[in-house]
Length: 318
Image (tube, rainbow, N blue to C red; front, side, top):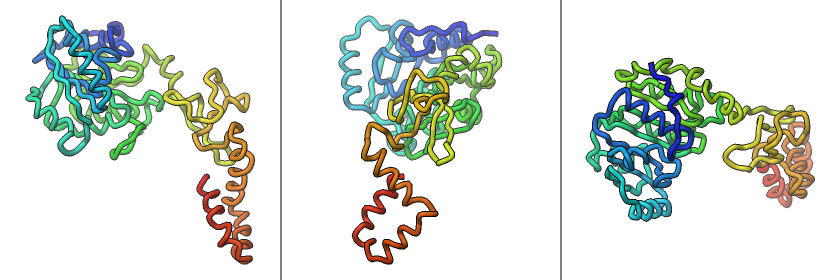
C-alpha cells in the first residue's frame, strides 16, 4: 500500500500536491495524459499541473476568468520554451449552468471524457462546480476545501456564488456520491481517485488519517465561532484570508485578554470613535426590547417624522 503523504513535494504547488500527484500515477498509470486546471491564476506559481506539461509530456488546459491574469498567462506562456506537452489557455469564468459550465467548456475543447486529472481552485464555488460536472469523469480530482472550517462538519457556501467554499466533510460526501474515494489531503486540497482505481491507497475516505500528517498545521488554521452574552460574535483566532475583524491580533492564542477576541467585521472599534462611543451604543439601545418605549414617545410627540430616518439608520447598523 502506498503512503501518499510521504510523497508530498512542491515544485510549483502550494503544499506538496506535485509529489502526491506523481505518486498516484506511478500506481494507477496514465490513460491519456490530459489535465485541466482552473482558476489557473499563474503559469507556474501555485500550480498543481505545471510539472506535468512542462516535463512529463502531458497536454494541459488552463482556464482563467480574470482578464488581467489571463493576459499574464498568455505573456508567460509565449516566453516559455522547452516544455514537453501542449497547453491550451482559455479565458472563461467557470459557472454551474449555461455556456460556461465546465462540461460545456471541455466539450468544446474535445477533452476525453475520462481525462486523467482535474484541479479545481476558485476560492468559493469549487463544490458546486464539481457537483455539476456530469458529462466528464476525470480519473483524479484535486479540489480545494476551506481549511478554516472544522473538517468533520458539513458546511457548504451558497450555490449562487460565495466565498465560503465547503468543508472537507462536504467535499468528501460529494466525491463519494460521484464515485470517488478520498485518498489523501494537503492543508487545503482534497485528492480523490475513482473508486475502481483507489485500491493501492490505504485509509480511503478517512478524514482523520488524511489530516494526520499536517494536523497541527490544520489546527492553527481552523477558526471556531462563538458569541458573547450581549450578542457579539467572536473567533478563536485572527482571520486567515483578510484582516477585516476588529481587534485582530495575529500573536494571540487565548481569550485571557480583551485584545485576544476577534470580532466580526461591523462590530465597534476604538479606531472609529464616533461609531464606537456614539452611533453603535445609541443604535444598540434603540434595538433593545426594553427601550421600545423610546420609539413610542417619539411617535407620540410627533418627533418621529424628524428623527425617524436617523432612528432607522442607527438600528440598521446592528
